Length: 59
Length: 411
Image 1 (cartoon, helix red, strand yellow):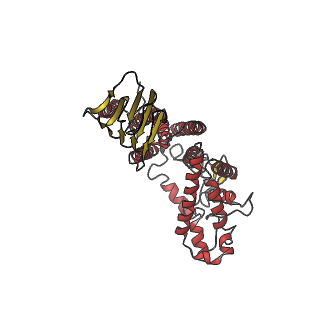
Image 2 (cartoon, chains in turn purple, red; image 1 turned 180 degrees about the vertical axis):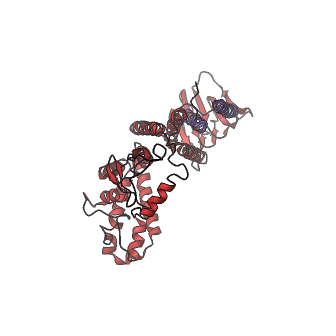
Image 3 (cartoon, chains in turn orange, yellow; image 1 turned 135 degrees about the vertical axis):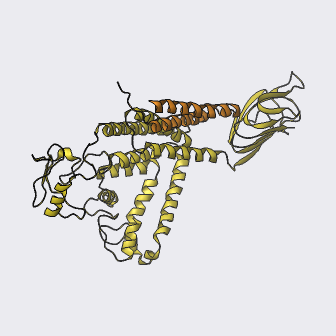
């Protein structure tokens, strides 16, 4: 049984767009994240998106 | 419009390829009918869009009026040029600036009066129509009997030595005639002329030199991704419409639309990664990210500033909210009642001058900037500062939140 190929570019761009959109909504309606959170969350989110892209590319 | 203008200025003849006011399909001035004829869109859609734009932001009225004056009716002269021939000397770029400026002024004035605007919804629907639904776009159904067949599987094959491998057409010599579901179709060359016998012979000698028709791509993924794009676009448009209605009651910053659009496009792309990429959505996502970044950074560079002073605590409002640099002078204020004032400053620095007499408590929260209190304390984050001279007297409590900027509190 073969796996269905995944369009990695769409997946990575889509995940990044969702992360940026949610962050903007959070900043607008909830609170502005502190500098410490931004310093940690932004690189962590990019690493997570990258790992998901790598895992999807392996399939 | 401006190409037509140039044609008219040059004494050229207007054709249906250029924008004009329709002669045959006119309800008011024929502007919508002319646009529908030029771009081959259903006139009802154009009129619907024009009415919605006019009602939601007022820009539609400006654009319609400009088109009425500047577009010719049929192949004639524009109304403005007929009335004032000297105006014809004005360059088309000048008119572009004038019309754009007028539209911008109306947009700002209407936007200041009403928060609810359907403009974002119209933009989404326009992109959706232009990219997915307009005849001739990728994936749109073929229209009319003269449309080109979509693939070799629609050709009528005939028995022959290569039958089964190549999609053979009707026999030469003469003209090729292909039977399609829409009726007989006569293929032509790039100049619109029927294929000659020699061309037919060439075709039969090497019917598919580059393997174009060897393995026709299945249409299912394209159709699936198109359906996803349509559903996602309509969903985003519906959400924008609801946000516009909410905008009449709650302030909706422009960045909210960009953020919601980003989430919608992102979810569509994630779904499309497994089912078929919706065309154009990656470009839309990148454009939205750039626009959101530009809007967010513009918020941080506000040049607005405000200074306020109060003579007593009772004269102060319970909540002060300002965007930009803010100075609150309470040096002459008398604390005549116990009161709590919530101060929120965004996109600028804040300075608070405390009363010289009386009890007060200051609690502060600054996410990014530095805080300086009268005793030298402060830093980043949150904290409090108080002076209680006489516990039996009223106390003024200031709760200060600075989102992006520095806070200085002094006496």
